[in-house]
Amino acid sequence: MKPLISIVMATYNGEKFLRPQLDSLLAQDYPSLEFVCVDDASSDQTWAILQAYQAKDARFQLRQQASNQGYMATFEKGILAAKGELIALSDQDDVWVPNKISKLQEALGMASLVYSDSELIDADGKKMGQKMSEIKKQIGYKTPLMYTFGAWAPGHNMLFKREILVTAFPFSNFVTHDYLLGFAATCHQGINYLPIPLVHYRQHESNAIGADLKKSKKNYQSRQERNARICERMKILAERCPNPKEARIFQQLYRHFSGSSLLDRIQRFAIVFSHRNDMLAYKGKSAFGNFIYPFKLLFGIY
Image (cartoon, rainbow, N blue to C red; front, side):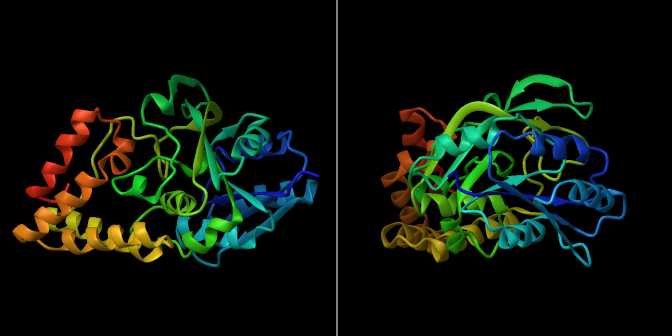
């Protein structure tokens, strides 16, 4: 018997692209699925479309928010309602290849989470000739320290074990839900990466989170706001990491990132320099680049 897998979808005013994605979920060749769809108080025909699919297939479990709560709260509600031993997240505007779930389930192994590559399509569903692995560095993650300076294990192509929710919940407004899920997975049995595109990742002007093709930088109001958010993220990692050794490292980083004294600068440099190969793995730098990068922390937060 294959374990039950819950596919959790968050929707909001998604009538334009919703049907092709729902059809691709129904076309999955994995034999044991449930579909948990939570609508975030849509004002278009999204809810009616979901109800029509539920009428045809009893595996659809629908929830509707009384008022708009945002996509992270909507995903959290859907995950809490899921019954599966394994959980996959679905955007409302992508298209999955038919063997996505079965391939991810096979590749999960002993890890707590697995994610795959994805192929970009435009608003009309046409392939853009580009994969996410050509834009973002995609790797496996085996320690929480690899999440220190960013990571890319996106929600639209991940499958994870329920066990990580004790660390990932509740979601936070300071980091994305998939960042927390990925970090939580590294606190358990780690993350596998499957270098096969299993999602047609749609890019359009209304993406909640897109592929960032222009590689734009975050629009902070000030450097002080940017630094405060970095410190808050370190605090979250320190509070949630169940592994004592890594938790202490995050606690030290939070303390020394929050200060601006010469001692704080030296301490954060020393911490990152000591763990540079893990902390900087996502950045894909050379050995020399990993050696040089920590020196930036003598002059300011990265």
